[in-house]
Length: 502
Ligand SMILES: Cc1cc2nc3c(=O)[nH]c(=O)nc-3n(C[C@H](O)[C@H](O)[C@H](O)COP(=O)(O)OP(=O)(O)OC[C@H]3O[C@@H](n4cnc5c(N)ncnc54)[C@H](O)[C@@H]3O)c2cc1C
Image (cartoon, rainbow, N blue to C red; front, top):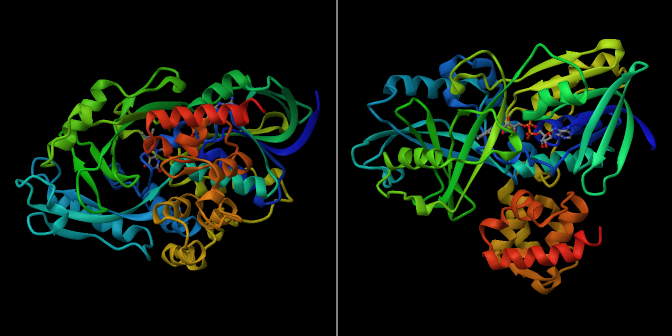
């Protein structure tokens, strides 16, 4: 078995692991990241897809978390304007739930806590007069509108991994860390690739355990260590239905149980509705949405909207497990969404365990995590990610609209919907996908919807895509736009083309 020496060995290719790997590689550390499945296959492709301050966390006095998250909105929008964009949220006021003064106070704080520059502030709506109120039942007369941001969560993970790799990191997917042992002031780490069965050994000065819902398993079973901290697993489910209102605004409705449900425009003609908050004890790999959660979400929507959703409207559901830091709260909705580090540095070999964290705060989390281990790496350079674009996000002034005009001029032959698809997923890297093409024929085989061979080749060569599912569901959302027959034909083609060749 070959043995490679590295500074940092990162376990977990979700948003936190990918973010730490990117930041560390950019500081000049040698980095290996290993992910047991596909990048973002854990919680980081199953989120509500918002870069948000978290309005409801104000009720739990999480001011530091909300402030940090609010600031991150504009930092991340500048870094990746193709996959992160502003969204307006309409909150119909229900006199049965939180009083209007409390909502107004929350929104005032939301507007002023986080150094908002680009995003518009809150406004009050007359739901009977303003067009945003049109889909809402007549009994709701007053509402509020505020800003947060949308993010393609799985792509955010992949872009961090791509940047990490371009800065020298080694990214291993479908490679589990099976054991980590302290030997002579460093770690001996063993990995196993689930496709080839190949085992490898690394020597690392430091391990970052970013295994999300599996963080405690890695501490106890992989490293044979222990921690005073615990992870609390809280399941959350979403449903996808055909979009049932006009306009690009999202909605946020309050439920009788004090929880809030997001109803967001999704993938053009769909809506993404979530989420639930349920304590979870099972295997994180096997989490699915229960019928009772689907009913709960449908009921919450139907309390507010004129158009009534039915069970058969649900085209898909998905579920994820929040790896929260266990702060001893009974109610799953009240458990802190903040992150906590745990440093274990026995015998000079350091392990940084990450508990909690949000998609929104991954960059800050990575930066602070690296500060925690800075003493072990005197060669490490300073903070850099706050102003650095992510791959494809290198647009002048982070101006997506100007970039869109530029695409129109550069690819006049490309249908508008395809240009939008490439622009939103790949930003300036559209040039690599469409390289040399002067017509649709130049993009190779067409599989339905907006899926052409050129995109598949790009994803296999540049983004670690290894299965049809990686492409249809995590790197892209083609699965929502291709028929069953088209998906089956694509999968068959992909398996013949790539998997058998591998
Ligand atoms: C329903 C729901 C809605 C949410 N909505 C939002 C939102 O709108 N905005 C927001 O900011 N946050 C949101 N979050 C929170 C956010 O999604 C999570 O905090 C975040 O994705 C956690 O990322 P992670 O990297 O810690 O974990 P993960 O994404 O789960 O990554 C951990 C990875 O480690 C890998 N792994 C585990 N063990 C090993 C091993 N031994 N070897 C190698 N790899 C291993 C796993 O396969 C996994 O891919 C939401 C979460 C849920 C569940």
